[in-house]
Length: 526
Image (tube, rainbow, N blue to C red; front, side, top):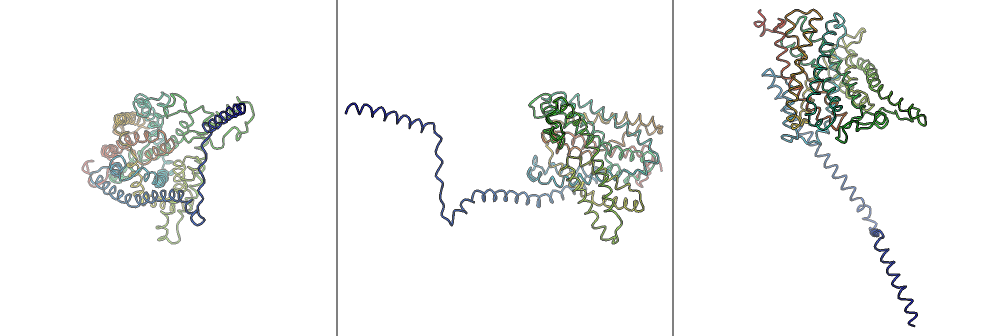
């Protein structure tokens, strides 16, 4: 008996130890599944999903209410502010921007960041129309009459402005907030974008000043021609510049000082900052399984050709779109109905063109500029009538487009970033003015302008507005990590140029004696 107990007790102890070990290291048992009654099981099981859907619907409804109630009120206040600014001979768009800044989340908080994001559709629509309007100002028939002065002055201003602004930004770039801990290569990349934006000019502002002053003469004609050519050129330059920066492989998150975004080949195949070459993987290129050196060479070649191909395809799509837009502008059999519908057609066409080309990975603003230029320069029996219709449509919609675009741009502005970079913006503005003075002096020498034009010619090229701000906004969309900080800095520069530009242009027109407005005749001596 004792012998049997001696065998049972150790066996029992070992069994307990094994059970304890299994309980200690085993995963916890799954909770028992609740069995719901047949009539309530489906409703109870859908409750979590229903709660999520209800919460999402509530948020969407709140954003819709905010957009439908507050945005119209903000736009109405912005319009009144623009009217007040215009009364004191200041640009209307400055009033729009200031109203937007005050209404944004960083001051009064009338618009939340979620609502601002939802309004990106309106932002894209405005960019599309601004692009079409900028392209439509380029009239090749006028440029062909005497192309040399406009092309020479455009070349001088572009070269001087780009190199001066680039050098200034490189000097102060490490003091810009988002660049302070990054390498010199990062500074060079952003400096190239800032320098390209420095080339931009505002055709709309120039036209407004010319109409106000009734400016007519060789000086005014030259300024207008250079402004239009330069804005088309800057859109092309910025499109190429964006592609080159995106393909550079620079990491702006602070994770590395150099090409932390990966090698050029890696970025071509995997993408980065939204700059992947669509469909250009080793398999797509037909190099899968081939010599790695040949594959690397091919991918590098594709990377360097991608900016050129992107711009070339954007040009081709813009030309085709301009021809199609011309069909929408043909004289209508019922003129009264056409005057009502044409603005809607153009807005819808421009918005669809911008959204479609952006989805395809092209340069949407460049496509819209080329489309506007082609639509305004069609040479056939109804070409002049179509050009007049396009001009009338743009004249009708641009006040509203400017109101919405500049007000929304103000709501997205980060005041802290602007204040921290205010002195850098001032340096860029001053450097650009010096560059314009030198460029205009050299350009006037080369084209043989009168002596009195040399001292004041630079004043006609200072103002910036829609196109420059539109390009800055495209940088935000392309580079979400640092694009907004870059845009904030450039908006400060653009606003300064917009404030000082029109008064300088007015003074230049008076100085050369080409103002014919009734209120200004005394200033020009008759």
